[in-house]
Amino acid sequence: MKDRLTELGFVAGWRLVRMLPLPAARALFNAAADRAYQKNGPGTQRLRRNLQQVNPDIPEDAVRAGLRSYARYWLEAFRLPSQSKQSFLDGFGISPEHYDWLRKAAADGGGAVLALPHTGNWDAAAAWVVSNGWPMVTVAERLKPEGVYRQFMAYREKLGMEVVPLTGGPRAPLDVLAERIGQGWLVCLLGDRDLSRNGVDVTFFGGRTRMPAGPAILAIRTGAPLFAVDLSFTPTQTYAVLRRITPPTAGALDERVKATTQLLADAFAEGIAEHPQDWHMLQKLWL
Image 1 (cartoon, rainbow, N blue to C red):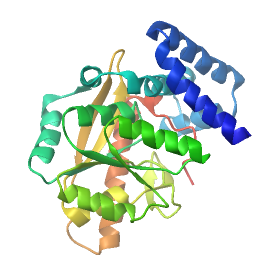
Image 2 (cartoon, rainbow, N blue to C red; image 1 turned 30 degrees about the vertical axis):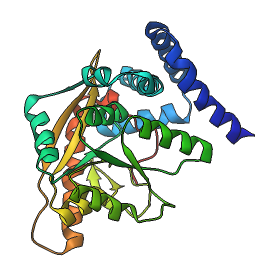
Image 3 (cartoon, one colour; image 1 turned 135 degrees about the horizontal axis):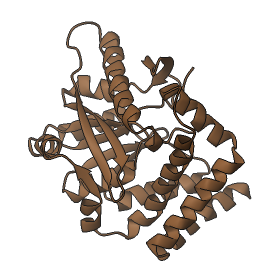
């Protein structure tokens, strides 16, 4: 019964939130974020501890701002399926130089690996990529209940991306992704939290955590360019900054994967430190 109610809640979100005028929807989601801040539940407490790891002197206002930023992600996610291609393009910002990096990767047919932390709106970024005519594939965690997982698969596929299940698919995800890179696709992977418990140990904001090895393995295995993508919110857009990562070419494969993943962690930290309120990490991260 609980799983069914959760599934119905997501259905209502996708159907009803997009019907509300944007100012009313924004006020509703901000109010929900403020209530979560006042209740100070486990998610809010975890966000506070994570932000204090980023900056021990971070002001308390950043926690409230972080919850509002997370609410904005969900508001935009529920409304994305009803928006036009032009809306996707207009709602996203990137420098001309970084745009050219992606355009070249797609045009040359060599593809690219884009690794992202949980910042800003990664679904809006994906919608922008495919609206430029660039084929894109990502991996989806198999959520519970199954109905919610299927909704997220359908939602992201409707935005134009291919979605490969992290577990339970007919082929290993890394094999599918490597094949797509060979076809000139952009591979987008969330990379700041390990879901397999078999990730790579890295130092991140002075503490030890694990991050997934997939982005590093793909880049080393295929030779495709690797970018850490930093997303943040402006008043009207999701804005992207790309940081190019160069994997080492010498040493054993496991050592190169570890070193590359640490480079990604350092790049993630650089972006998160610039706008910590847009890092939506309400789960335990550090070991």
